[in-house]
Image 1 (cartoon, rainbow, N blue to C red):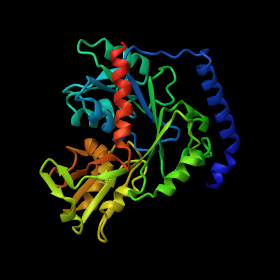
Image 2: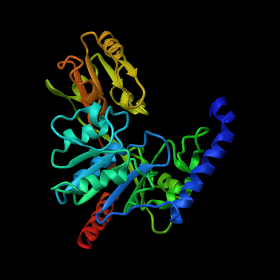
Image 3: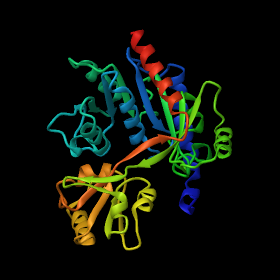
Image 4: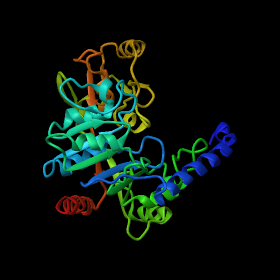
Length: 341
């Protein structure tokens, strides 16, 4: 912890008090939460950024979209639009935000919407002629005005919420006690060979309620990189000179997976809007070498860098074990909620 964060500790106490009072008012019904007559699954975290919400939302889309009319609703962080927007053929990353636009491009059989007011966003989705049967709320764990039917809380293996402190001293958006709202807690970004003993240690630290389920996931990288000019096997380009570009919260694993001795890396802030100056820097750094970026950054960089040079590496969330139980829990919730409508 750096010195500035230590100095700001009194503000962390104040921030924690404010968020605790807010949660108390929602819990007691003094501040109103709105529930909806369809399955609503909220995916989020207690800390700021970098817990792997996007691959987890995509996992749920794959699980549900063949069986139910599925929609995602996000805030659309750093988008250049306001209010409710439903993705269509004219949409881009500037209108939707990078992650929602990524969902829209990858999953044409679902509805993708953005609205900072999740209550209004859900109402607008339900007003559609072909309305969804299940809605996935992206990064909505603290959005208490909507009462989701099911909550999935993510926490990173290297930065567990139980070891963290409130902002601005730590990275927590709200008190650790907020984890009590979760139906499922997922420890993300684990080593793929994490031992059962270490999993048990983490379970004991998290102090789960009897009704809560715990799972461990890791980031599974694709075997290929993709671009407009085609795809290439990762093994084949591993030793080739290349430029790695990332504008995500924690780019180190992405760099480590691809980087070879002669490779250069450029790191930008999370959800970065690439300026003309940034594009020039990328071109100058790459020269004639291929450029590999994250899938989230690709939707912002596509069309601004030479298509024959630009590629992205997809990722997925993969369970160390228990994926069948996780799937069953989600499908049971959605199926029961749908039948009881």
